[in-house]
Length: 297
Image (cartoon, rainbow, N blue to C red; front, side, top):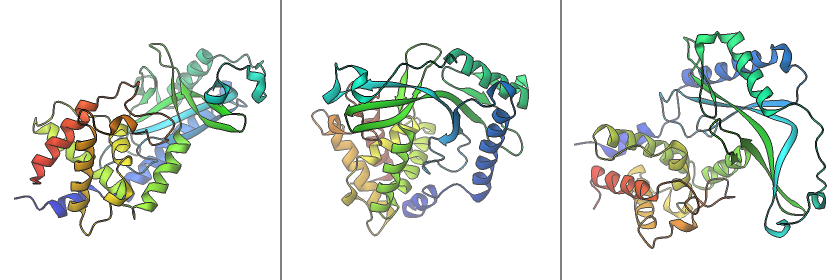
C-alpha cells in the first residue's frame, strides 16, 4: 500500500540545490557564449530563463532548461479589442528601420553556440537550438524570439515574446506575466499551487510508465489546469486532500458541458481550450486515471 501523503509531499518538493546551481550555471554559460560572439556584440537582445525551471514548477531530475534570447531592436504587435481595425499610429507605433532580419538573428545565435560548445553539441529543432548537457550543466533549449506587444486599448499593452518556428507561423507567449501570476497564486494558496503542480507532473509520469494513460500531457498544460483550480480548493490539512480537490475540479471541469471552456492559460490573456490545440480529453483522462490510481472514492 502506498503512503500517498508522504509520496505527494516528496513529489511536491523543489529541485535540489545541486540541480538549481547547475541550472544557474547553464544559463550563465549560454549568456557568456552569446556575449563573446562578435556579430552579436552591441545588438539589442536580452537573455532570460523561462518555462518550468524559472516558474518553480519543475519536478526533481527533470533536466531541461529553457533559455529565451529575445531581440528588441524592433517589436511585433497586434491591435486587439477596442483597437481592432485601427491604424498602428493610434498607439504611437512607427515603422522600424532596423535591417537585422530574423534569419540573421537565428543564424548568429546558432553560430555563437557552436563556437562556444562545439558543433556536435548543438542540434536544431523547430523553435529552439538544443545544447547538450555536460558534467557541470543541464541540457538547454535556446529559443530565439522577438519582443511582442498586444494592445487592447490606448492605455492597455501586454508585453510578451513572439517565436517563429522553422515550420512556419508564429507563437506568442507572455513569460513575465506568467511568472507574476504564478507567484501570486502561490502566495494565495500558501505555496500549495506549485506543490500540487509538481506532484501532478510526477504522478502523470508514473501513470504513463504503468500504461494507465496514453501519453503525458505537456508540462505547461499541467501548470495551466492546476492554475484554474480555485484558491479555496488548496491548503487543506493534508496534501492528499489538496490533490483530491484538484483532481475533482479538473475532472468535472473537463466533462462535456463542464467549465473548462472558460479556463485561461496562466498569463490569463488567452483561453486554454478555446481555439487552441490543447487536448481537453487527455486532461480529463489524466484526472480520471490519477483519481483511480490513488484510490479516491
